[in-house]
Image (cartoon, rainbow, N blue to C red; front, side):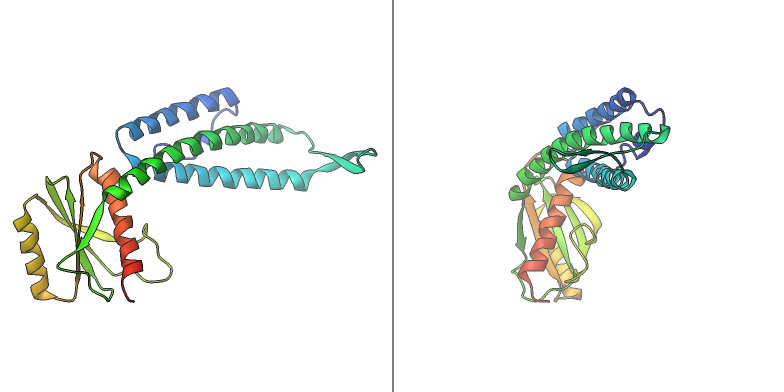
Length: 233
């Protein structure tokens, strides 16, 4: 999801009140997504925006340091007083800098709320291995059981030990079925016939959050963590 790209910050009139109005309107929409349980899209959006704002703030402050010229000497505290020369571009840059400072605070506040929601979901998801946990890491399958109403079957490739994280770990949806324990057993038997060495996990939970925009990313993170910690490479 890209609720708003970087144009809100870098384009249009460099008026602080105008920019602030756009920022607050977009934040209101993101807060609305949060209220509907769309946790992961909000986290992704805020990380994208914060990364850009942190970089801008750093570059602006670094440039200011390079452009400083000596203005006076403070003989009391024995230090040189510097100033940044004024020009039309620096005025616009200052508006953007002030806006970045405000936006970072507000985005970080909402980001913390989204992360708290993530941490509320995480302990509610329980992973188990069928019929039991094997020792060696391999390719596999996971069945995510959505509130005992739907089963989502995914396949996955074993992650590499270096150069990856749960975000780049790929799991692919094979099918979804109405919940029935028999379907889970049948799927496992079918897979086991062709390749008895693959891993097979199930993840259960019983909380009311949207599956694809909240539950699935957390489940993916939990699965990746278990694969990296609990198996031999």
